[in-house]
Structures are given as C-alpha cells and as structure tokens.
Image (cartoon, rainbow, N blue to C red; front, side, top):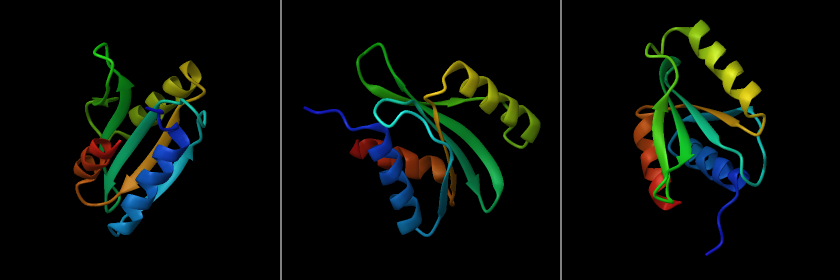
Length: 112
C-alpha cells in the first residue's frame, strides 16, 4: 500500500476544516513527501493544544499532545515552534481554528 504524502495529508486536513466551517492555514511548509505534521488547535482564536503526528515503534502513526503545558502562553508556544523548526526544517505547522479541533484531527487521522 502506498503511503500518503505529507502535502496531501495537510491539504486534506485543510479542506476538512474549511468544509466544517472552520479556518485552516499553513504556518510553516515542510517536506512535501515525508515531513512531520504539527497541528496548532484553536477555537475562535482561543489557543488549544498542539498535536504532532509521529511514527510509533509499532509501525503506525499516532497523534500526541506536545509543546508547552499552558496553550495560552503564546511566547512558550512560539519558542516551541522555533525549536522544532530548527531541529526539523521539514516540519509542517498547520493552524486550525474550529470548535473541537482535536476531535476533527482524530476523525481525519482515522481516514489516513
């Protein structure tokens, strides 16, 4: 079975978010083929969790909450983004602004 590219997955996530009435934007473009995807969740501008798609030792992709403990700490979040991008320039950072963004990510992940 062919693996879906990161670009395809990001585009699909953006379309699902917009179809559900939300807003989505690419904050940092990563490697089209295999970049890690970091999703910054918000609800009407109020910051929510950061979720990262990672390859698990079991051979499947999983989503994990990452970053600062307080999602409202904008400086810590910005520092986390900067550290992750400097460590992995292929990282995608996508912002979703929609009610219950983590649930949308979970539903989207089940499709991929």
